[in-house]
Length: 310
Image 1 (tube, rainbow, N blue to C red):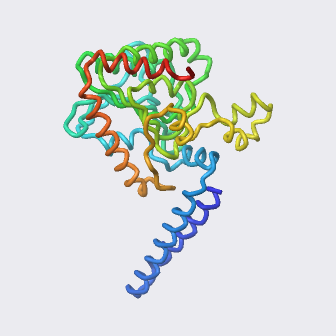
Image 2: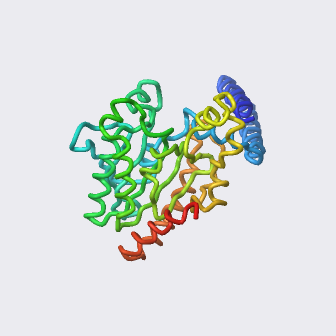
C-alpha cells in the first residue's frame, strides 16, 4: 500500500510545482492550499493502516534521514572522532562528542549514505570490525570522562565480507556488546531505520531503547528469514507478518522502551516534527537516567537485557 501512497504524494508534489508558474497569486495560493490539505489527508489516512512490510519500506526509504542528520539536528558543538587506532577509519560508523541541551555527551551511530557514491563509501551502513572498535574506543572514553552515550542505529547488519571476518568481525561485535554492559554512564539507544542483527545490537545495549515508529528491529532481514524458512526470498512480505519486527510489536514485548510517533514522510524536509518528538523523549529519558548512580546504571542495564526471553 505504501508505494501507492508515495506515488500519489509525488503526483501532488508535481502539481504543486506546476502551480508556481501561475501568474495569478490568489489562484496559486488557493490551489497550493488545496494540495497541502489533500496531501495531509492522504498521509493521515495511510498511517492508520500500515502493514509490517509498509514499515519495512519506510525504514529503508532512500530519503529517510540518516544517523548524521539526527546528530546534526539534535546536538550542538558536534566534534567527530575518526579511526579505531588499529586499522583504519570505518565511515559506516560515525562518532564523537557534542552537547545536548547543555549536557556533554558522546554520540555513536551507524550511518548510510544519501546517494550511490556515499552508500559505497559507507558500505550501505554495514560496519566492519574497525567500525565497532572505533565505537568501543568512544564508549570507553565516555565512561572515563563520565559522559552519557546516545547511539543511533540504522543498519541492515554488520558487513559479512571475507576481509571483515579475517579481521575479527564476530569478536568486535561481541566486545562492543560486552563493553556496553560494563559502562557506568547513561546509555540511550535510538533505532532510527533498519535495526538488523548483531550489527544493530552492538550499539543497542542501552538503559533505554527508543524506536522510531516506522523503524524495524530484527535478528535478520525479511528476505533472509524467508530464504531460510521457505527457501524463497520473494516471500519477504509474508515473512514480516511472522517476524514481529515493528516498533509496536517490540514495545508490546518489552524489547524497546518507547516508540516515537511518526508522520509518514518521503523526504527529509518533512521530518522536522518527528525530530522534535524524538527530542522531547530523549531529553526526558536522559534527565531521568542522570539521577541514577553509576552502579545502578550498569546493573539495571545488565538486568534489562538478561531478562529478554526469560
